[in-house]
Image (cartoon, rainbow, N blue to C red; front, top):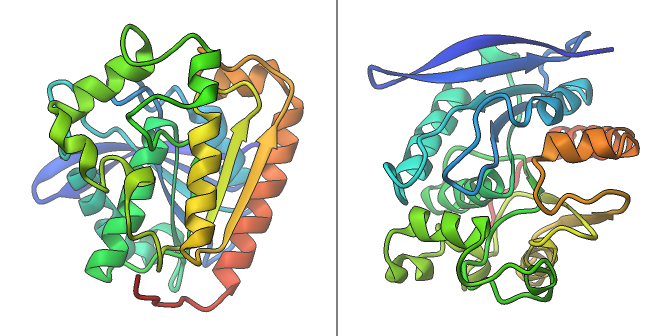
Length: 274
């Protein structure tokens, strides 16, 4: 069953933020409510580039609201993050309208969007609102140092590649690389976060930092599932292109999303101080 989607607007203090809403073919109420942030190395991407991924999450039972956040270099850190956090709060306040009374709230994203999702989880913990039930992170960009083995294997690194260029334009200045909301892998406080599902692929340039972040979360006492997918070359592809190149991924991802969303929608929300 294919999930349907509609265009929408989120009213952000008088500013309309473009969004796309994906719903299950047979929706349950309440359904898990997911704020999704697309990839694009902070400087590219739109609501189309991860439409397939959002449909898979909706087919797994969620109502997915994917937002068109502002991009660097015109909007460097923390512009996209701050607007996304406002959107997260708005979704929580209006969750009954979107997904039913009592709906649990999740964040999700891929690469740069997963960076924003991790930072939203940190902000929600630090501000003790809104309560998050989980975070779905697809190959999260969490380390601007670009010194991992998987980055080097992809002939990428400190300059002249989309990852380096994206980080440079997003951060704007080197000192921001030390901010935990900008570069979560370097954060000293990763306890008390919502459970995480982290998925990457064997040939992804940011595979190593994704798996390292999973280990850091585990060390902080966060419940984490991490999965390594095989079967396609995703070095320079969007997540949707990677899924199309490896159709088996769709079935695997749908199963992972379905289980994670169901388990963390049923579990009691816990507030754990870092």
